[in-house]
Length: 79
Length: 348
Image 1 (cartoon, rainbow over the protein chains, first blue to last red):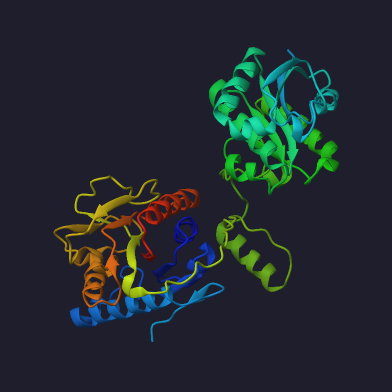
Image 2: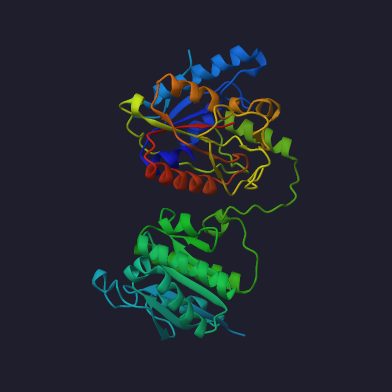
């Protein structure tokens, strides 16, 4: 789905999910590894503050990925 | 009883000419024509090519609906028991025509159909699920084995005999799995396969993984502060009550929902229907899968221009690759139309 949206719209699509090999396999170009399968963009087990902080960091990373020129599939790790 | 066969070929194989005759209209002829002569020889007494339907590749490719219905009418008039098209090798438009008319004849007339294509012919990806396709070489140099395959498989299909595995029949896999009993159980077979793999011996998987495509990365966004960003999600987050009845797994649809007035997804308004992960966290706060709250915050802070007013969402578990690709194509086209500059797609 990521790949086809990018192809059809001609705009960068950043995928945030947890299983990186699957994202690589399906052809996602900009990849941000998420926290966990049931909560890719949050860390609710650590409490509301940590949850929101994780989400903010991941989304900022995704926005950075969108503005970064790449030539091949690239993984953007949250620090 | 002799099996009645109708054969489909293009303008070239019917002797009308090459590209200059590609706009030839559908026509039918009695008996075998062109490669059909050799096919008839291979059928022997068992089957008879009662008629041949010819159509220009340009006509079929450009005016598909008209060509399809006219060809179908001509084919039906011969009252066939079996329909054969091609071989089209790696000819794109001819392969498309062969696949399309086979699919149509199979569906409308309820008779077995078979064509013959090179595995990379675009007709394969489009129609492999709807018709049997004999695997051929990429050009007419492979005519003899292609016709032999068509004759052999065609007779089998017409007799109602089950086909064996594609790799043994010389056909293109249709993605059909059949159950049968093995002497050894799954664990034993898996360990043997692993040992073969470690030792560098050949082994064959029992479950082929689909092959995915790659595309060159899109150019980056130049000015994030002016960019409209859309959220797309395959984590099954939908408005409470799942108004569009998106399936919990093996989804065949996606939803599009207005979030222009939402700052946050709450358990009262949104929920997860995804059948492939533990939904406890997502149902307490759907933002952990579809992050509307922080995106809205970043929008207010001016980190990026605008959060797009609509979200797209589906469940990505057991979802057929072909459906997921279609969702992507449709969503991509709509986002382009809406002038969206970038997408964050979250998956579970």
